[in-house]
Length: 81
Image (tube, rainbow, N blue to C red):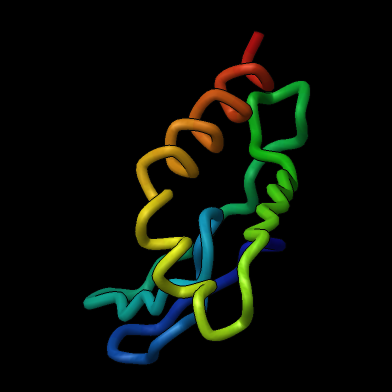
């Protein structure tokens, strides 16, 4: 998030959309994302409630996965407007 130097062959945790492992092949720098005025990202949290018994929740989520994906996509699209 804050950027900094990187060394070849040394792994670094990065990722604006979740943790990713970056292993550069050459020295360089990771640059921080600019703030909102510069078009940078922001923290978005989506809460999903599945009303099902604990043992049935995984199957209920699997059955509704497309609906959940559409709802998340629509919520994120609303943020861009």
